[in-house]
Amino acid sequence: AFLPSFYISDELLKLQMYKKIAGIGDDDDRNEIYDEMVDRYGDLPREASNLLDIAWLKSRCVALGISRIHIESGKLVFTFEQINGLKPQVMAAAATTYGMRMTIYGGVKPVIRLLPQKKTRLQEALDFTKVLQDAANV
Image (cartoon, rainbow, N blue to C red; front, top):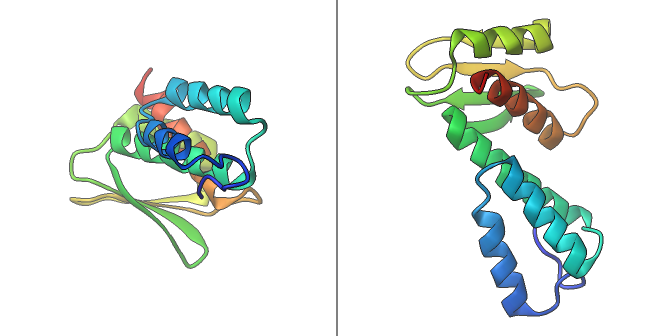
């Protein structure tokens, strides 16, 4: 996940774009930066698109209290901070959407393990955090 030189060749412009991407705080920010990049440089290559999505995912994780995402035994593992966004309505939405694909472990730092479907793991993490975010904002 990076901005390839064939996409943005000027190093100063590339650094400015990295700074904007690092500042993604919500879905609107992500969409605004995506539109700006398409307008200025054309369609995003996969590397640049992944960079935007990772920054977007990080902003969601901060808002939800997710401290770590990793893969373990083929499952996406979401580790939460002690103070997090796991309210009853959030857990109900996740259980309704993911059912038996999701396992919840309580404790001081809760963990959710999610069995991915055929999407990329990045897309699966984005979709999962979107479900949690939407339920938390209701």
